[in-house]
Length: 208
Figure 1 (cartoon, one colour):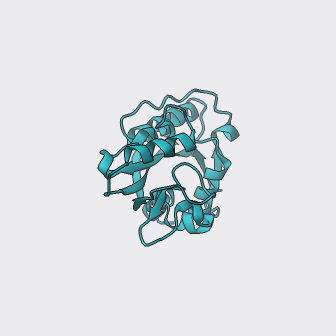
Figure 2: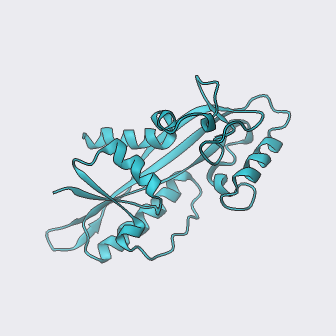
Figure 3: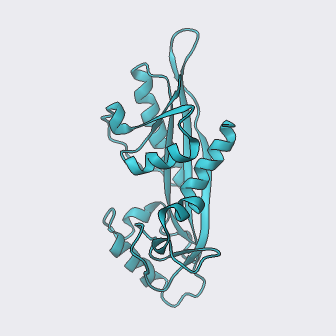
């Protein structure tokens, strides 16, 4: 019987990343939508790890209340520019004030980097892992979260280039590349991405 892995996301695309790297021989993957999760998750942490744990813990408690044994995975990620003290960081998706406004986020980032030559940056991902198991008394117990991290280092281009990807991909040039993420094929990007590296760290820990 396969172990149930609940990914704390509504994104079918994200769940494919987990299934592709971890494999489906041992695990069955479901999204929040698949399990009928109906609570609001308020991501008010001060770090990627804190936000990932908020998502995993909220989901794990929801499953435990319903008597469901599973493993919960939740990630939080974003872009950190070192010369901007790590900004946009945990505010990456809403850097310009509107959640998911990629164009205005990129425009603001370029504005804030005007005149700065040190444009080193990284995409960073914190992945939280928690289990819900049944103890000898028949109670469903949520484990303490474990965090797995992944990063992809690079630099910020002086103008957006490419039409693939999303977020800051048109500006981010990974180390060893002349292309931005938005110029790279999806499989190329997945092979070096921050989320992919975090999932691979988890896979190593699971020994699968």
